[in-house]
Length: 513
Image (cartoon, rainbow, N blue to C red; front, side, top):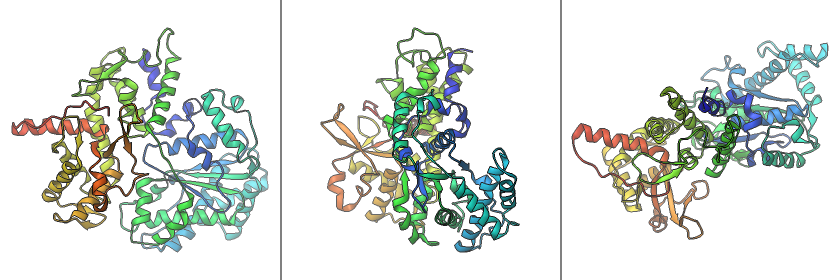
């Protein structure tokens, strides 16, 4: 096995669940862990973030951390929750009641599967509650009392002894987070991928997700020390807030309980550095950088670009600020290099991987907002032929406006169930706002305090930037297609040229993104 084989260990394909064996090595602290470590009495926390943002890894690490202190903690997945008794026509109240029973049964079944440490009476309580359909109210009452009784508090601990492989800075940050909640008893339940209890794209199924959240709150309120964290994809939470069906008005009651899973390029870079360092430690010594054992040069050029950039930067800017994207991109490059018999990843491998990778993430983001805008994929493809300026995939506000206007004139676009009108500026700005919110278009502004002289506005901090009333502000912004999607657009440009024989304006990629 060459060095790339060692790299694949720390950059595997798949999801966080497949990384349990290396999680205590690769985990990098994020502020969200500090907040979800101890949910308040009587309420769950909702951990909301994009697919691949690290929600599952955070839950799995926290479960492991709690287990190291003998604090009971479980991760419950949708497959553990019996939904067979829930019909499509059921009211939210009926589903809420059935989910309460199913959740308690799932908790009971998980505990009963590990029979160590329980008395015969306790095992009887667990086994009686396993079958939600047959268990009586008294069975669930006894189970709730039992869960409250076995809750334990967090204590101050020497994390270096419990997790010796953790990054030192992460050890320190986690110890600080523990110190803030020392003494609070809890039985912790982490519900991951919650939206999978339903088909959010099917009419009425959002009510299932909502009923589950309400059932979780019911159990937290009626069972002392039972502490829940529920993970949701951002687009599903946004649908719950905006969908007109069901009791959407109640989402306001949960706003203070939402923990947004914000990631940044800096955080993705730290994750990348940590995994590279771990992989490099398994190879021969003498390399100047942890990237050197795996890459043939210190830097490379992106497809169709003349600018050389460090490998870390090339990967990070294409991650969409999602750790999973960065891990998958390195995995794909290492796998292809091994397949082609190369000892290291080189620029040619990067150029070969990026078009397909870019197409994949373009399809993913279109799928994520398919219910809000079924034509999202077609709109993304249309941006291959926008009127870009000479410094990359960059548009002035006027050029971006013209692009959306052209798209509306060519394509029937539906947004949140409403057909957009070609002649409506309000509709145009609504569509623009969506593509800004999902990160397809980045808002770049001048900033003399930054090394490169510019910065990017975050949709989370500037959600109302795109509107007719702020047109003057919008004209001060350059609108860039995110780097993760550019190689897919380049492939579409090349395809169009082959099909028509017509030349198109090629963006020169000299900007830093």
